[in-house]
Image 1 (cartoon, rainbow, N blue to C red):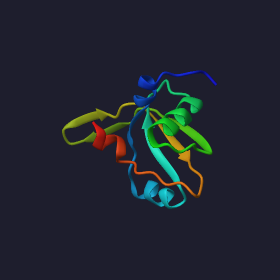
Image 2 (tube, rainbow, N blue to C red):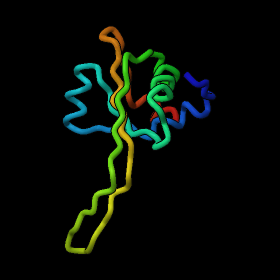
Image 3 (tube, rainbow, N blue to C red):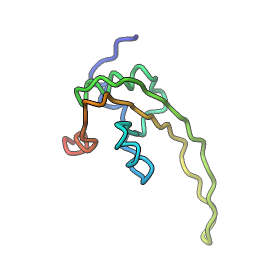
Length: 103
């Protein structure tokens, strides 16, 4: 594992990804975050341990490509983003809004 500075760890999580499906995953202790495009799995796990004080069991990442959506006003393209699923131990729980309330 590479050593990452604490300032860099804070910037890895962009925002929590909250949908109906991710709320069902939260019941299974899997939390979903949008992360920086250059973040690796080990950096995501280090950031989760630093920010929330819980060492995750695993992290899965997915990269979503831009999608063009058409409406009556024209064509709009969504940005490319990376999503991480972080699995925590059953005994641990985190507040995903913790980082948002600190800023």
